[in-house]
Length: 293
Length: 154
Image 1 (cartoon, one colour):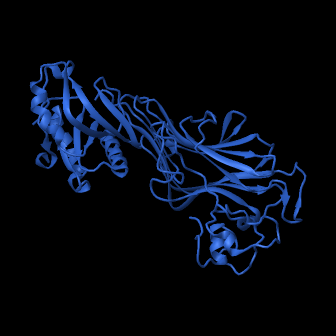
Image 2: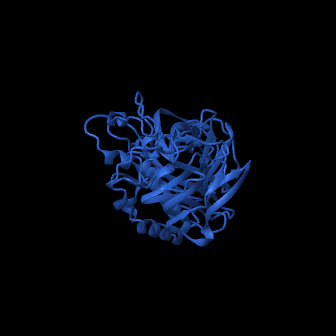
């Protein structure tokens, strides 16, 4: 939820929105990246430079960066509820392969900012196309900026990223190997699974995991593609296969970013989706054939 | 009463549908009541919402896991369709054309041969404007049955 657009605004309000480690604490640290890199409201400017003057009114309407959403009404099965949703269903009425997932792409630009965009899709492990992108947001994280020296670093000092997921709730209807959910990234065009849950392992009522940090040396305009998707494929004529992924209250899906040589949490950036409701976020892949009816 | 019918009604009874969907009137409008048929047609009359569609989808999955006979769920905003039963059954043309707008909602967008306009509303919720129903298939010799309130069957 974005910060208020008028009236009183406290330092802690800003820290909470920025998911800053200073939230609720006593230390004042306006140079924290989680604060200075909140996404400003239209017409507002939060100065990025360390120790530069900053006004509380600059934070009116500012919001943390979130991913999710889909607004592709041309394709049945896609959620059209709005850009804050992260809900995807795919239903194979013939009992074949069904996928529901979202691809999140990070694109470093030549001006040292990163575009982050996402696309709900039913491509499964295939990288799919980058056309018809559902939404794009600019993340003003500077991959070459060193907060310890307040200086611009060499371009070969890159970034690291990882998945961090908490409160994951996954249910499998048939509990066979054709039901699964995957979190991973693309090595060129090949999907690499970093964390998966398969139907044979049974439902996951409250799973959490964090993948290892991976290096990313951003090359301008080259995409780093990540994906989370679930699948269901019912091969028997009378069976039902369905994989549903949700979050429990308080749960989240995050892609965490940090500068390669900076392991402190103060300089960590999140692309995230928090629990909203039982249907947001929600991925659901269904497969069964009742076409004889 | 046939055992397969008794068993299916017991299954529906176990789902506590009357209480679970108290804002909707539920009908069984299906030849399954009279003969063995490939599915059980069930109608929910009332407001069609994305939340209801998700819940009915779960119901469909629950029932299909417990019985090989699929539940064919339909949501109607009203009961206008029932007023066409007699005229449909008396129709001798290859197609029965509705003389008013008939709207219903399905959870899946199946391919059909009759005339309809389908609009995607939300996951598992398709709005169908039914323009006509073919009478040259199974309904050439088979009538539409009368709907029965589910609460009268359980």
